[in-house]
Length: 256
Length: 243
Image 1 (cartoon, each protein chain N blue to C red):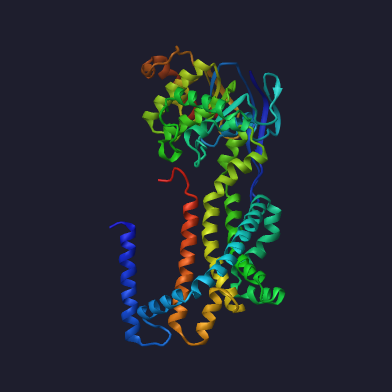
Image 2: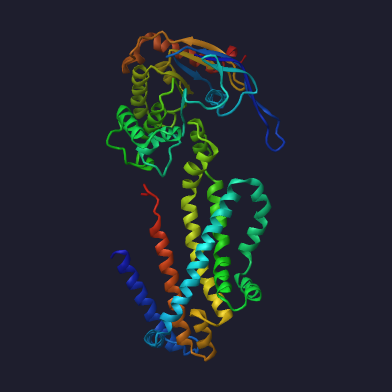
């Protein structure tokens, strides 16, 4: 379980600019095996919140606990999937997927076996020896996802992972992510600025205010799982979407 | 036409233009290509090229290897530690900009007409550009990759060996390719100054006798050495996955 209490973060201003408060006191709990989407306008601080969860940067105030233990840095209980994929350009798909295992010190043979299994799981079998630049954006993010899953973390932290991927590939990535999350029983914290994506994927949607980020509202997405492609036609789907759009576009409450 | 055919045609045209241009101009220091070819044949047949070339190549190899080791070590330290960069950047830039001929008389006063002076000249010509490119390559490792590796628990040591160094490799290779060309210049500059052994000394001898065809023939050999070294380095490392 992830427990965020009173989390705050301010970035120092550069070149005489005033400091920028990015996160203004966030309280949030994420249950095991839950899929939570952090939704908010661009630049609202949702990525910063995810980086704090990942242990890549410290919070200025408040507590971030995972299963009761404070986050002091990156850890094997969390796997991060990055917006810009962050694949090693000089390494092939197999080496990229095995990178976390290599850092962990797994023996060569074990990490290859594990990496191959995950390459298969994300639908990239046959591309083991391709290099990132030979793959489409969607395929590159499949590598990113496989790399995060390879170290078998309890939680996946995903930072707008499908933001730069074309609509068709994104849809298929979303479906595969839901399937893999279910199979591997992962907790997912998923940052997005797409209302549609948040409703398709999340068990709950945490709507954040513009900077500095605070929790404006938490919406439980009471839609059935598994979620078929036809989900978008359900009246309830449309209703949640309309509500979120209303909050994002100038609803005064969202700016509190 | 493939690359080699294109190059052969281009070279043939250049030699023809040289031959015609030199005959038309009649300038004593621009002998026609045919005269240079005759001089080269004489130099090779008499064994003067082979003897001096091997001496020159020994200095080149020793000086360049030292420059690679020292340049990469210094570049890594300056790329990795900001304090080191702040301390040494001005000197590095000054030495990169300094006319290379400056080094040889200083070495000569220190080591005399010895092998050390010749190796030192090669070393000093090549080392700074290798340092500068290595420094840039190490420093510019993308933040996204560093952060990704940290998220998987990478230590500083991991970051260096598994992210920064491989990321810097193309830049370092570019530095080595330029460095080897500078090293060849250093070899000739050193030998011409000392005028005792090697191709540079041979250039001085024939230059002193006003035999421009011989001078150009030897310079042609020197350029050949530079081209071969550069191509060999290029072969050594090709970035995988390149389109």
